[in-house]
Length: 122
Image (cartoon, rainbow, N blue to C red):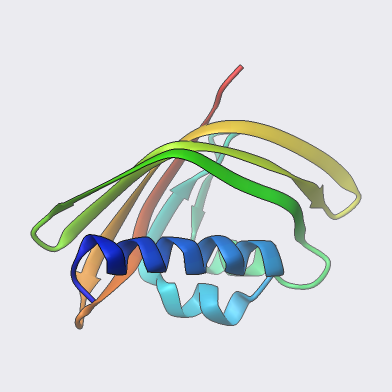
């Protein structure tokens, strides 16, 4: 899995895993040394992200993307775009329009999410 179509497939699998709280797929596709920065600027590692999507955590009702652009530079894939998320985290409801950049790395012949940054868009 090395080309843009493969990267697009992994991106979509991750999006669906976040929507369905499939933390097993998340565990498979997120790199062990992952770092993410959410809309509030908080830093998360892989274990924090997996914990957030277990039962009782984040429940997404909507996760849509637009303007998605993919670029590959050797073993690095970069995906940018905008997103709209709506859901709950515990008892709190949230709704975010975001601009994102995700960095994927090719390891052992497959793409894995290594870094993610989401910035709120007014």
